[in-house]
Every structure is written in C-alpha cells, then in structure tokens.
Length: 432
Image (cartoon, rainbow, N blue to C red; front, side, top):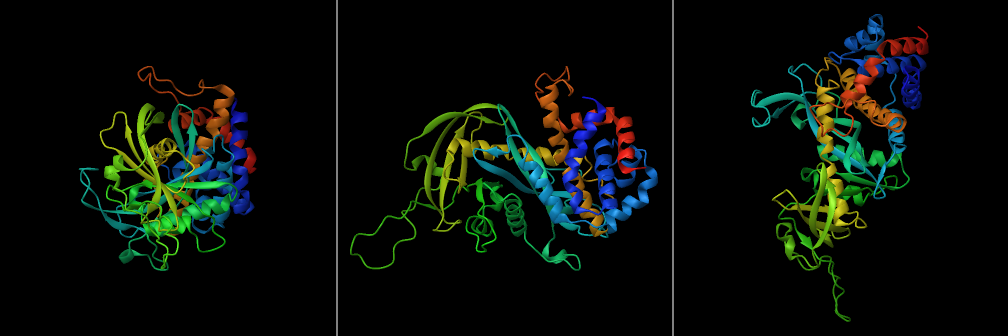
C-alpha cells in the first residue's frame, strides 16, 4: 500500500474526533497521535515531535496537553462509534466489552494522582514491596476472529485513587463504581443492540452486578455481564409456585443448589463440544443451569456454567445474565478476556504507558487517553490493510513459524517505513 493511501486511511480514522477540539486543537491532536504511532524512543511529547521532525512545535503541543480545549465525552463517543463500525464487532449478538484495572508505576509522590500499593514480589522480584503508581480502570472492545484469538481494542479509562490519598478537588469512587460507570457510558454511546461486560471475579460483587442488570435511572440501559463464579457461590433453583390456597408471600429463592465447585451435581446432562480457547481448538465438557445468584438478587435469572477444558486441570465456573448464550459460547468469550492483558503489555512496552513524564492532572489523563486511542486506531488501521493486502504487509519471522497474525509492532514498523512521506503529508495537512 502506498504512503499516500495509508495516510488517507489514517486521516479518515482521525476525522471523527474533530468535534472534540477547536481547529488548532485538532491540529495538535493529530500531530500528537501520529507522533506516538511513529515514535521509536520514549513516548513523550518531545520525543514524538522529534519523530515527526517537528521539534519546534513542542511548546504548542505541551500547552495543548495542559490547557487546550478537550471534550472528553465527544472523544469517547467518536471512538465508540469507530469501534462499532469495526468488522466483527458483534459477538454472538452482543457488543462485548472487557474491563479490568492496571497499575502504571511512577516513582515520585509529587506526581498528581499517584497512590501507594502493595506489589507482590512474585510479579516483580526486583521491585519494592510498596510502590507508587497510577491505578487505571480500563475498558475496551473484544472483536472475535475465526479460528484465531480475539482482538482487544482499548477505548478509555478512569483513574482510581485510594480513599486516604485522593488529590485535592477529586471525589473518591471505588473501582466497582468506575467500572459500572464505564460500561454504562459504552451503552449510552451506542444505544442500539445488546452490550455484554466481561470482567474478572474480583468485580463479581453486588455493587457491580446489580446496577448493570437492574438500572434504577431511566437514562441507563441494561448491560449484561459475564464473570467468574466463586467455588462457594450461593446459587438457588428458580422458585416454584406455592400450593394453591396456601397463604403467605411467594418464595423469592428456590432450593439451594450445590456450590460451583460441585457443579457436576447440578441438574441436567453434561454436554460436549469444541471451542477456540487460548490459541487453539479445545475439547470442552460442560454443564449449564438457569438459576438465581445471591449476588445478582432474586429478580435476575442467570446462567451458571461449569466446564472441563482440555489441557486444564481445574474446572471453569462462570455466571452470566446473557441466558440466550450457551455455556460453550460464554466460555469462549470469557477466555478471550485475557487478550486485555496482552493489550496492557503492548501499551506499556510498545506505546510507552509507563514513560509519561507529566506531573499535573491534564497531561497525565490526556496522555493515557492518547495512548489508548493510538493502539485502538492502529488496530482499526490493520483491518483495511488485511483486506487489501492479506498477510503480505507484516513480518513473518523465519524463527517463529507459529506467528499467524500481525502485532502492534508490525503496524508501527509499517508506518515508520513511510516516515518521510508521513512527515511531508502531515505538514501539508497542517498547513505548515
């Protein structure tokens, strides 16, 4: 693909964000985002401008990051609509969102928004047991691919503060509240169709599940959930109608079911099938039951699943309010959630999520949003490339025959090969 055609695709992806900024602000936005994609050094503002050969714009871009007009709601709505137009956006009839939190380490207590956290030594033995970091709750879209792992496209995030370390002027909100707010906003940005939020068992609590499936405010749309079920979770069969003529209130809960760790004793037969899980087709044996879950409350029917997966000793136990999906489909979607961890790795290693040098609020928040957008747009750029050129545009290492799809690094390499043309075309589009 020629550089002019590639740049045209890139500009087409950026165009919907114009309404979020003033005209000069959109020029700075375009410059910043393009620089992050082309940068091979630290992903700071100055290094990104050096990669574009526009070092003289450093003051204008830093002023934009600190003081420029920025409509975050419009940015998120524009990116959500771009995601909605991506090929394969719906998975088994749902728009699937993966949400989790991740820490971005900063060493100084004078950096706005940092909090102290305990760091497990098993995760990083060379790091202190107590670290200072930004803790982001991030949400992104999961896009399925036939006979391949799903794609994770990050969308946006919110910064979490510990109650004792909330910066001046900010309001304390728990991670659960932030996750619910993010999922609700996604449903608001694209109101048509069903939305499914996938998250880890740490968020499988009443303060997350109940607001999603039973919103009290009319402006909020119901969002289905899929999460891991604890081995000792309290499940109940659906209540049966009392005998005719019997007085008293109708029962809210049915008979207590065996806990998920004993899911083999649930009513119903075992089923067998194959699903694409963790990089290959695997044989799955599962059992599912429609029941009530104490966390969700007696008004919400859920589907609980226990599954034995080829290659894994422990059983999977899942629960979802999307009862129209089979246990095999729920397992397939939940296992794809781990692509978000790969996305966090790429954000930190390839797009410099931990290289931010800002000290104040706006540059910190906006830099993270720009890095999330850069990764999302790079993935969206990949789809027309695949359609036009197949797999010829990305690197096939002779030492790794198992590589079957492009990485974020492949997309960055492609843009960097056309760096000179991108610099010229960007200068023409900015009128400088």
